[in-house]
Amino acid sequence: MPPLRTVGWIGLCFVVLSIDGALLSVSPPLFRLPIAAVAGLFNAWAWFGIVHAVAGRPAPRFIPAPAGLVAVIVIVVGGAAIGFETVTSRARLSHAAHAVVTKKPASGKPVLIVSGFGTHWNGEETRRLPGAFDERRFSYKGVGGDAQPLPYGENDTHRSLVELARAMGAQVDAFHASTGRPVSIVAESEGSLVAKAYLAATPTAPVNELVMLSPLVTPARVYYPPDGHEGWGVAAGAELKGLTAGLKVISPIDLTPDTPLLRSIADNAPAVRDLLTCPLPGVQQLALFPLADAVASPHPTEVGIPASVVPAFHGGLLSSGAVHKTIALRLDGGKLPEYDVWSSVERVVRVASSAWQVPPLPLSLNPAWGRPPGRSPSCASMAAVLQQWVDGSAPG
Image (cartoon, rainbow, N blue to C red; front, side):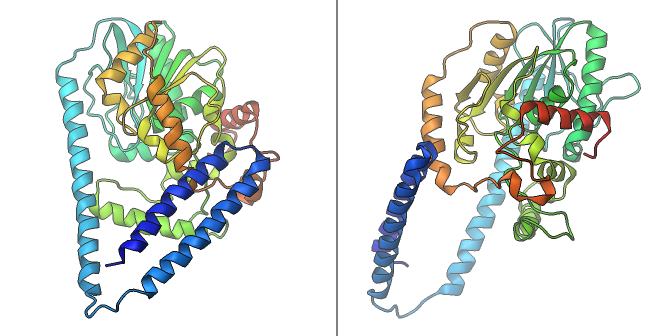
């Protein structure tokens, strides 16, 4: 066991570096170098203290390293497997319970419901939202000969972003044609990115509202080359392959770094990284962020669209009754509930977590991205590229 003094040093390092990262994320450029220098001096002092604490402790008579290592592996792997199974089972029970107690109304405002990554749908028509809404599920597999959405499996959510944007266009057009009314879209996680890409590429889409749940703040922050190629992130790509192979063993997640969806996002960072902040002419937008995402995503200083934070985990908003009421109020044109407290908590957690997040790779450094000038392309440039995708005049 390590000396208690080393544990104290490590805990203090975590606190100090978290505070330093928070200050760096909100400070003007002039103050960033001094703040980083202070953190560096503290880090050196902490290492000095840790080394002295370890070197000065009595030598142990017996070090059960193999047994301890095996115990750690069993706890980590076993705990992860149990956690995945518990979360998956709870999600399925929640979805099943919601499907049993609701029935689809004969008419109402058309709303396309778009689930996230790794979901599935058996084709049953069920409602998610309270109120008189004509809900229709978006199918990641597409539509049948009758223009109705087909049942889909988890692997169908792995299709490339451009394929899914085209599929959404076909389903929105069919929904609009059958109702004669503009369509509202409620999309979660991956579905939010698909919906935003589709609408940015299709300014004439018959859509007037977009509600995004657990949207991806800045996708494609990093890059790794395709299998068998060299470039930025080649080592990280190899690590991701090992990680996904391990996840496949202990969880229901079945994907690789070269899954078409992930590959299409990583290869096209200039068109999708800052897409969330872009306005959509003629479309009212709302983004609902789960509080848990604050530890994983970089701090969005300016989201650019109406947004709120709710106490939830990523991907769980579409199954939350409280969030359902918020969505229904928005679609009905009512006043949304206040989430000021959670928004404040989210900002604190997000900036404090910034020290432990992977910094985004500048677009201008990666030849695979074409090295666009500036920090980020304009919304018009991103929309033009996405329109080429959907029209089939550019590779996806």
